[in-house]
Image (cartoon, rainbow, N blue to C red):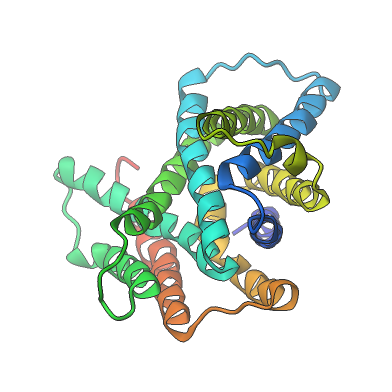
Length: 289
């Protein structure tokens, strides 16, 4: 791995963890869609200024790819914001790591359809990863909220699809700032629509909250580091942020995952690591990838 890629993926993991902590703090007083609207509105304004300063056109040669990035990215951002307001910071963040085995599953299904044979071991990280989700949410295997299980599961899928679109855009040398801008605007609209639908009146208050502004700073830095680095690597290696979020969560929020949650996180991390080192290289070396 190149040193530049190493720097960007560590930076992305760190900023994402800082964003999670500040968002978790803010989430105790606002609905997730209010936070989403405010944070991405402010981020869009910052990115708009950057576009003007760098004289980058709004026009793109790859509208479909940016549309896909926005669609799955917005869903991923919405679910992430919701989970952070509902779960301890480290637990909420760990579900982002599930994108790694979703990517493996997507590749595996694609190659299966193409009738390319692979050993069954390639689905091992998928099984381990989903087991981690179940253990984290439901350690006693009792009744569990189907909605929460669905949300946590689909989160990784949306994050994985978003990463794959980013990878394609990177191959076409699409402007990172332009991609981040359209994603941020889409997220703003999504959060704003939900605020209107649910009749929220917190928009002004949340926009003036200094902690929300701090969260925006970390969000902005995360978006830039993610867009500049290798998108797929940044997604897979996002688990590098776990030490950051565990330490910051304990110091800033006085919260730490329970034993069963740590076990679930460990399973998800194991799945993410295996997905890249054992399976990712196998897929990359395969014909037609």
